[in-house]
Image (cartoon, rainbow, N blue to C red):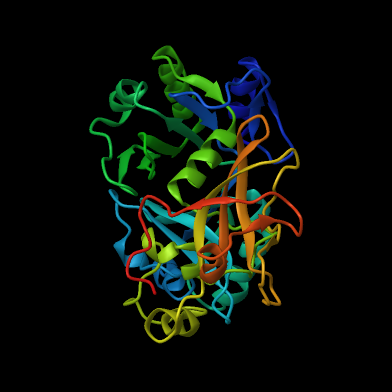
Length: 344
C-alpha cells in the first residue's frame, strides 16, 4: 500500500489487512453510499512505444479501443483458452494499466515478461505508486464532480483529471473506481465522507461486483474458466474481431462452433460456513469429472446469508438445482441483470 495513503487511512481508524486493503472495525455492512479502500488491487504498468501492440497479442479485448474516456475489462488466457487472470485495462497518457487482485500480480507479471522478448515495452509493478479506491452511491457525486467535472455515465466510461482517473463501474447504483495519486485520493475521500458517504470495507465493493455479475479470477480459480463460462463476452470483456492472442483459437471456437455448457449465475445461500472461491458444487445426477460447478466469489450480505457468483453446468442449474459441496445447502440461482444474450 502507498505509505502516504496508509497513514491517511490509519488516522481515520483503519487497519491494513493481510490482503493489503484497509478495513474499519465499525464499518457498516451494506450502506447506500460509501467510500472504500481498494488497495487489495494491484497495478501493472505497461509502457513504451510498443506497449499497445504487445498487449494486443496477450489479452482477450481490443486494446486499440482504450482512450481517455474509455476503459475495458479483459483477461489473459492459457493456450487452452482458460483465464489465468482477468483485469480492467485503462490508459493514462502513454501507459496502459492492468488493475487486478494483488494475489494475481506475481503470476501475471511473470507471464507477461516471459512473452515480451524483444518488444520495446516496459512491464512494471505500479501498485504502490498510485491509489485505488471506490465510491458507491450517489451522495458523493458532487464531490466527484468538483474534482473531475462531468462524471462518466456509461459502464466502463472514464474521466481524467491530471494523473487521476475515475471509471464508472457497472451496478444498480452509481459506482466509481478511482485510480490516482495519494493526495488526490485523500481529497476525494474527505469530500465523499463530508457528503455523507460511509467508510466501508472492500467486501462491499466485491459484493457489488457479485450483484453486477462481474467475475474476478483469483489463484483458486485461475485456469478454470474459458471467458464465456464467466460471462466475460456479455460485459464487454472479449473482442471477437481483434485477431490473435494467447488462447484466442479456443475462445473463438467456443463462440462460433461450440455449444456453451457452463455459464455464470448469481446465487444466494444461507450457511454458517463461508463459501470460498474454487469451492466445488454438486447436483443430483451430475457425472462431470470436474463437478457441475464452482464458486467464483462470495460475500456475506447479512449474518449467515451469502451472495455468490458461480460457474455451473447449464443443465444442472436448470435441472434439480445445485448445492454447496457434496451435502451443503441448495443455492438459489438467477441470471445476472445483463442476461445471457444469444449464447446457446
